[in-house]
Length: 452
Image (cartoon, rainbow, N blue to C red):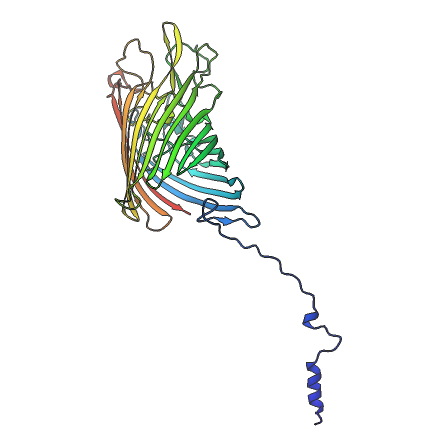
């Protein structure tokens, strides 16, 4: 069969010419490798919320929260000052970075948390006098309470902890209420080593910044001539030495702890410094037989010359008190630093009424014994002076988490102080100067917090 000229033309268009390259002849460029973000394995290397930083073996978690508080507290009744705020507004933004890398020695971890706060309040401390005659005062910028601060920043490696972290003396810091006297969990700078023994047991020895725990030194003598720097703490010569033994198991956890704290004065006089100390013990018991998540906390603390480890209240609405670490006393011509003793017992209970609604109850009781020389027991003492007293505190909080990451909390706390000697009110006439030997304060708070 003879093909038509038209068919031959179509066939020629379908065939490539010898000079034109085919697809197989074109050069091929290799595709760039894609390093996808991967989630991390389970703890201790990673866990929920951790992802692998591309190009590394490091797991990183970014977390934080937004917190808004609406607070109420009874103000100082010593003076009539309508410029002080009973209601305060507070907002915080917090961001944290937790980076962990597996090594042949275990996990290498670094952690950073930064808090930025805003609290525009006007209390007596936030006012500066313009005129002594008219008592006019202006609101100082320092009372605004705005700014960012490094809450924690530490490195952990092979049992070593270095940086700013919660004190290793702390076991249960309360944190259920607006105020938490009798317990404390401050962040401080440390250099610590933790040994792990298995079955949940561990022990830690920590060198910590003693400036964090200072409560001042009082002077009840004529030791310091007028015009000189008042008696107080000198420069840090010895940091605090802290140790604890901890166990954490399925039933809960427990800890015993101790601390040494140098009380070093700032005067060039022949008065010996003292070594304060504190001991404590606490237990946390899980109570799933009542409801899932229920728990009980108990803690007792005793301090001699290291009052901040007990954290007693020093302010009520009627007056203020001093709980210094030591007082300089002169007896028979000899001056010495006499350390202050303080102790407390605290308890907390958490009960889940439903998985999304629970209640906290927290209480504490304690005593402060300031060693200060009294030639004769006075009829009264001035406001904010050294004083022996007992105190107790009780509060409750209601918590509701309607969805994951969102919390509504409302709490109220009552604190009462009973002094050995009645306290005076400053700037009052003599007829009205003495008040009772007890004081109290109500504090309340509504908190809304979003965690992510």
